Image (cartoon, rainbow, N blue to C red; front, side, top):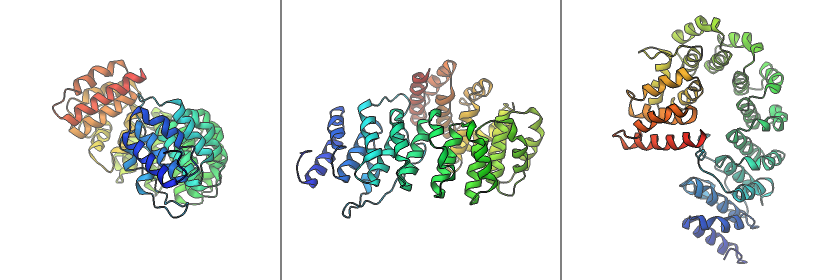
Length: 379
């Protein structure tokens, strides 16, 4: 039926293969990515992702397709955290098939959807295809390709996106700036400073300073001190992040003042992160580290707190403190701390996660089991 001359028959065949969802579905779905109908390609793409990320077809592009001729409404709703766990291994043929779609699908919606899928599956082998997709001149394809590169996190990708730091589309430019920061591209710092000095909007300025803050370089110290006094709380937050990564002990008093005097959450969380990075690792009622842990109880701010704690936990002293904190944490804190320790833990972290896996709360226990599995795959 995948070879039927009627497109509607092939579409229904793909839907059924996706619903079957076993390992035997993969080869037929790979075959369907080579179809000449865009809906078949989109549904095959989402089906491949669904095998490795169960439930994806219920939220992916194929779940909301509105077909008018060969046009589809483009709705990519998954956030940056939607990626498969590190212990999940994807067949190379799947990544190869998605890479071919990203660079040469039937239309731009197909290509954007394939790029989105590559990011979720951490398809490093498809990086050359994503570089080609970046030259499509289609804003959505370029945007999705950049975020796929972000999720793959291969520093070698950095030079391939440098030309987009001045892209005329603001959304693409911001994505390129953010990706450059995440890939820690030191060579891009001069261009990022020029973008910051003459931004087209406040959003671009925020992205540029945040990217600069992610690339530790002592030449930016005075820049961070300047923006720590900025009127915009997001600029103050980025400046505090930059000082955090420079780890200059003489900044402790300045950051302590910023933390205690700050009224806005983005900047206060960043100041707390900076103090922890400079050695304030104690847990007391009003300590910076406890403040970051407290943020894990907030649906609005736990993503920010989680990211800071993942980075901070790469320091052994912070990691040991967070491990002990799991024993007196709230349910939400335990779930988040398990995830954090899975990303930044070591072999000595495993007993703490195993203890957490026996928690009477089933959600906590499951989060700890998943975290232990993830950590073991990385050790």
